[in-house]
Image 1 (cartoon, rainbow, N blue to C red):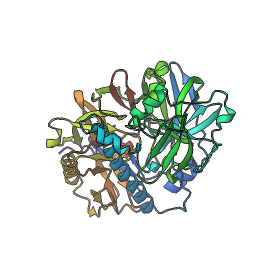
Image 2 (image 1 turned 90 degrees about the vertical axis):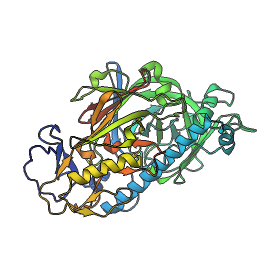
Image 3 (image 1 turned 180 degrees about the vertical axis):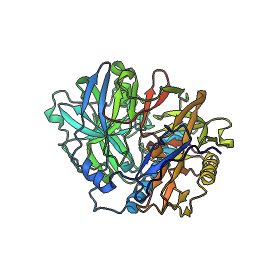
Image 4 (image 1 turned 135 degrees about the horizontal axis):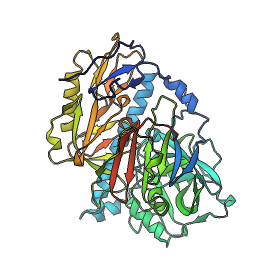
Length: 484
């Protein structure tokens, strides 16, 4: 098994940032490096700085992205913070699996039973994991919102608020915006809301004494947003979107939302920001997600002008999976994985494995047959390092205390058409303990082969990921993320 040239020894005292191998990753091995800021310092650096930039460049609109680390609780140890994030992530993965199954039921003979249940839409679990934010203009004000590719609807907190979580910016006040209007029940947008959320025509969206179309978004951790569907002017780097439909939430609770105004829905639905701005941006958007602990910025680009990207490798495209019951999700076929240049063999790849590319899930979750094969290959290639106990959803862990040099196998994901995407070296291992006594493979196993694999944002960092809904394809290229 080729491991490539070894890199000069580095002290492994604090493993917080993984550096790419000097050969550019072609050797199949990366080295670990110390020197990134501590989680608490990064969190403090980001708090109070949610006003993010935007600008128009050529045929694109560029929004600055930052990692969202709002936390009003006392400082936690790294282990406590990791446990909270991974527990939240597991809840989000379970929630996504439930939603995928719900969309399948909507188109099945059991659709009537599914509709009668009238379970509110679940757009993710604890939104602590939906951890990238951008700032947009709305009705003359500004709103910093969490970016989520698995959500159907954009919503913000509104006055008068019966119950609202803390946010840094003033609440959106409909009375101060002359372009604001509530969406009536007998409108196509209200119908689209019911389709997007899987509610029946007799759902609570409309009813006696409620002329406006109402919405309820409930999350598995008990968080929620409730309010009315409304229209107002959305501003994206000076590009005005008149009559943008969004949720005006007057009852919203959940610590995970803390510090933000709400959520930006970038999923595949009629009411998502992508669909509503298709006339301006052609149904194309892309992002580059910065490292969580680096304090750096990334970018969300609306439009297909690739000249604004700073990719260091050519963009490669793979087709989205066409499925009328897919809901708002972006599905691809995962056909293979290589570890350290070694192709992983698994029966799970035989007929293609449908996966979701998601901005809100942190850790990539794979069906057991594929995960176990990947795990076995990592254990083989990292056999020189002592094993460490499992931690939360991560069960492939190593004790790297005292090692002056650690070589990490490269990780590549292979999609339809032979498209290979190399995961940034920072997305291969997850540091649990600050003394490096517990360093784990940043992947987890799903409960069964019948669930849907998810590519999380930890494995998408320092990649330009392009979602082209008009051509039904997703593109990837390596890029050192910044506000371009």
